[in-house]
Amino acid sequence: MRSRFSLPLLLLIMALVLTACVPAAPPAAAQSAAESAEASETTAVAAPQSLVDTEWVVAHQDDPNVRFLAISSKLEDFDAGHLPNAIYINLGEDLTNPADSTQGQILTQEALGELFSRLGIENDDTLVVYDGSNNLLSARAYWAFKYYQHEDVRLYNGGTKKWVADGNDLSTEAVAALPATEYVAGDADPDLRTTGEYVLEHLDDPSTVVCDTRGPGEYAGTDVRADRGGHIPGAINVEWVNTVNAEDGTFKDTAYLADLYQRAGFTPDKQVITYCQTGVRGAHTWYVLSELLNYPQVRNYDGSWVEWGNDPSKPMEQ
Image 1 (cartoon, rainbow, N blue to C red):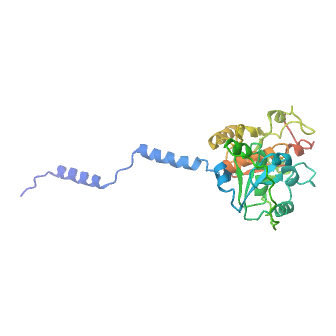
Image 2: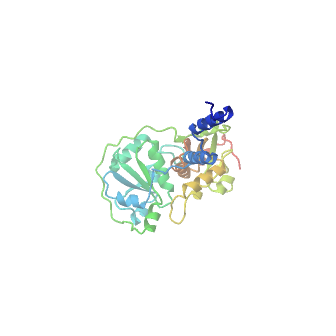
Image 3: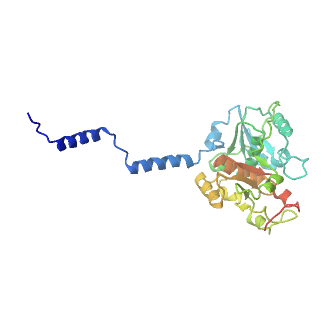
């Protein structure tokens, strides 16, 4: 018996069957959306683990392994009102090295060990630093403690300003001293701090950018706070105050901060060196870039302009 199907018709039927067995490719639009989502994940700013809010502070007020450290330059400010059970630390007297010829240099490893031992701090304590100065002094303390590799350091975002703004009262009660400990400070982390010589060596390095965190007058050389006024050659001026909300002392959101610095020329693929007058404002910007925005290579030059501006051998611009 003859087949009812011609050869061309049979070939067409076989082609249709084979095509039905092959999985369909995803639509181009769906692939593009997936790729965009993946790209967003890789560029998103991670939630900062080092920054705590009022809710966290309240929840840990009675935690025996959490120490709240009030960073200030005046004992009378602490006495006027502080977080309950907070420990007072004077930024200038306790956290700088009086034997160093350059003002404001970080304290020694031995000095930190002695300070924390006297204050009753253990190596495994969680340290929460705060201030009443828009996170400025607490960021400098945070940087110092991480420089000597204390493992768990947090910063209370906004400090006393935020505490009061959130409806809490400051305490004026005397804080009982803790029993002394035998705290052992870690070795210095060289990736967090740098020197004038290192800065000089990297002035022409295209992979390094210098951030001047001072006011525009200091940067321009009209506000002179050393033998010379001006700035390190090539430095870009982003004043530290641009990163905080003045009304409650908190940091601005990370999306704003990321845009602020990237527009200015500070990108995560570069090494960033921060500086100011004595390394305090520089440490604040170091915290923003390193801890909030996760920039991998940020160093604070704590010799800053008090060292550079007083050294006639160092180049400068106005």
